[in-house]
Image (cartoon, rainbow over all chains, first blue to last red; front, side, top):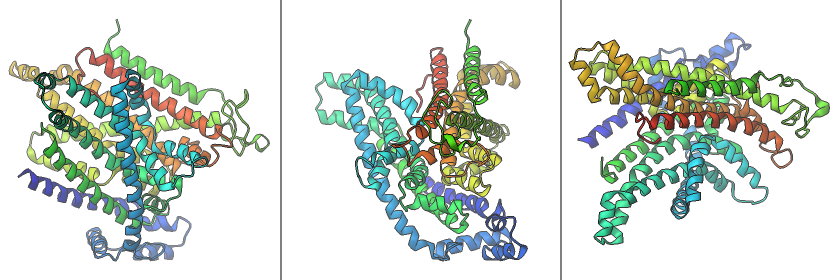
Length: 286
Length: 272
């Protein structure tokens, strides 16, 4: 039953998000005026209104927008090029960065957990870092890494991934360390140790203890990566999905903004549903 | 006697004082152009160095921080008021209908990534301050409302409330003496940490070129500095120092609040 509820919630969330995106991009502002500017004559504004179907009633416009979206006919307002072909190409570029970011995040957080178990000093530094550096936006690490490329000529997508990963890795490492440390000192683990249970039994327990932490962090990461991608792609000059949205937002290419917002919404909902399901499977308390 | 209210007042007073000193000190005019002294390193006259147009970076960064703080504070207050209203609407009538309908906007704004919403709003209004505040409020509101709702739900289920209700104590008395004193430290702690996020987001707006061009912006200063980190490091270090000082002061205030209240048994959980 809860799986059905999860599916229903995902579908309802998507539908609500589509309506919210439509209201945000097509109803709240007057896009024609925004795009054409205040000094352009009325005929240009009227032409823009027609091109964006702004003279139709709002429910009809919503249907037109959704139909264009799902039939793959949505086009850039500026270049008039079909948007779907561009979307897949840019998604692949962004996925490469996200892949590197996940790799670095896991590698760094494992190193941090290992170090914190070895040394009290690392553990204290980790505490301070997680409280302070976690509030620093991603573009600061991106700028520092961009500067470092003058000394170490690494590939840009690798560095963009590293820039995305640094601060979440500190948070994830600290969260994992706290959970594993608490698990190690818990009475049932001490009893298991006293009974001489095999290491594999401890590992299974540790994985169960770490699971909620991973689910929690990955949930936040979906939002964080969405925001961070736009920034790191902008800093490193990578033509990915985030930068495409940013450029479209800056020049008010509303159909593209609507398309990307829908696409990312679907990604967010799918990731969120997988996260919830994983939480049910992995978390012993769920 | 140092009690919770005093600690909070000291903290808030300290933060406001630091920011006011930073923003209102009799420094150079942040927008005064002096081409003859462009790209000069830190000196007694210009403690943070100067930019390409010879403007004092220290004054620009301090004004930028003051603006970021002000915009984030207003956005946080709006978001808090909207969140409290939302909790009141879904909880006070005690009808499932209000609860279900009330969750619709939260679901929509959680599914539609808040960063995209905020960025789009800031872009549509082309860097106007009210749009930045609205964008920041919209970014914060879904999560803050959820926290407020969870917090009130948790407090409402405490055993002493059932006792008070059984004894026939008035609702206003329960709210004033049994709900608010327990709920506020956790809510204020969350709001402070959230405000740090909003300051960071405001800097991101500046970084991508969506801040108000008529005033200094820390994000935009960092954007301009990104290609000159090796040659003119002060272009990057001065705004970064102000930014870090601002966000760390507020986040440490949240931590101190957490710790000062936690040992009294009011906040027992760690920050997640």
